[in-house]
Image: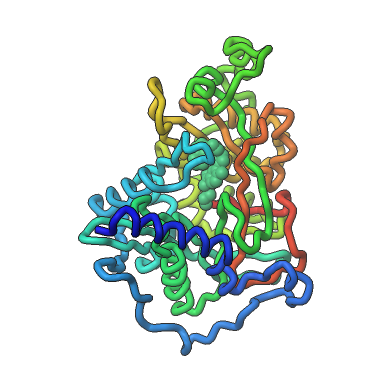
Length: 406
Ligand SMILES: CNCCCN(C)c1ncc(F)c(N2CC(C(=O)NCc3cnc4ccccn34)C2)n1
């Protein structure tokens, strides 16, 4: 084992490296840097050459080895769950950490057309210590004609005990290689941190559903003049939704929901086009994972729908609560029902499903309901990234973003 002194020296050196050359890894990647933003022409930054793609995996330090994770296998799914539960994204004050469930991970990572070698793990003596994932998507960029088959990257995670080993850049390079070898050259991903070069900087908003719990876990705080009971009254919601014909989505709704969604998303500069199979996968309700409600008007016509996903956070140290139950706004299409009314019903439905807070980004048309429904801006910023693609416009406004990454 390295002596304490050696470890400290190694750590100090790594800090110095970071200070001297921040983003050392990202400068080697095809992402426009600040002064290229005006010179690069829109489209791919580097042309991919299939023959040049490395055929074998990147080298790992000894005792580390690559593995493909089969999330359908309970044991392997449990290993991923535990790695993320203990080592994935935390808030800046280390009070909360995401607790993605196994059912949620199967929903998020086993969509139609998934590639088994895009669920990538790194093990040391059978223990999972690193993880990164990709799923195949067709992204429409800035106009109808430009649609690009690419990967959506997510769940980059390195075990806390082996950070500063530069494993994250190797995980990124390896999944990039596995995408390139399938002749795909772009990626879309999000992150709470800023690395070169976001295409959009969006913000989280939170709507309190259980004011007392949010104060007890430290998610919300009371100012001098506020009391818990006054907060509860302020955020109180009716027992039942207002919209006539609002009900849980069923299989028979898939065709109409697909048409509504694809039509609705065309207004944005970044959006996916969905097949009926994909709508089945992403929107049919799954307990404790995804909730979708449709508005059915006279004899079977679906005019609107709302959806939100379940992403609890572990409350790291709290005498009374182990989890914060958070619902995240997914896709909402309002064609006949006013969007404020539809989202007010979403709050009521989420409250009745037991959520403590309802989160939404300021993307799509969300600005139209955030203030009126008493959402508060959070400290969390979510940056969107496109790998190896120069946009016509340097940055997109949040309301031009039509994709939600879980
Ligand atoms: C593709 N993947 C992106 C989604 C990952 N998502 C949901 C995420 N990425 C960065 C964030 F900033 C964030 N925020 C939700 C807001 C929030 O609730 N902040 C307090 C809080 C409660 N629990 C946690 C856990 C981690 C971080 C903040 N937490 C901020 N959400």
